[in-house]
Length: 180
Image (cartoon, rainbow, N blue to C red; front, top):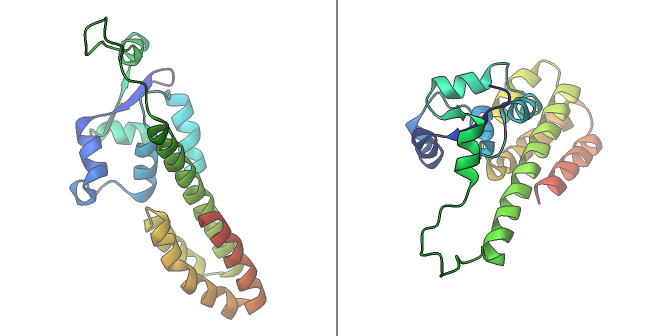
């Protein structure tokens, strides 16, 4: 399974489009499912899952939920091979620069989201003591940058109360820079 390429199933696509469709799809599982693109193998996704803070066996969990599946190497090559949708004499249109730029922007935005989530979790565990458990749960429920930004004022107040306003200002400023 580690060498197999992973792809989203139709149910996985729907679960990403309609958040309420699969209540078992937590924020971390959703973030991992977003990275299942038919290009990464199980080992790469397992490493990515670990960096997201997911438990072991998360790929098996996605497969169990019917949201992703492993395909063999031969199927992956066939999946990656272009299939002519038009007659051979008509060249297929190349992806536009706008499409490529949008894909790069989405990838960069996702990486910023992950970095901000990690920074917030570190700040919470470093400065909030017992409150960290509850605040970490709030952070982990966030599935996009807007939701993280909505927590920044609350995080600032909590850190300022637990430590100093100066520390809170510095931490929140760093997180805001990443989320920009």
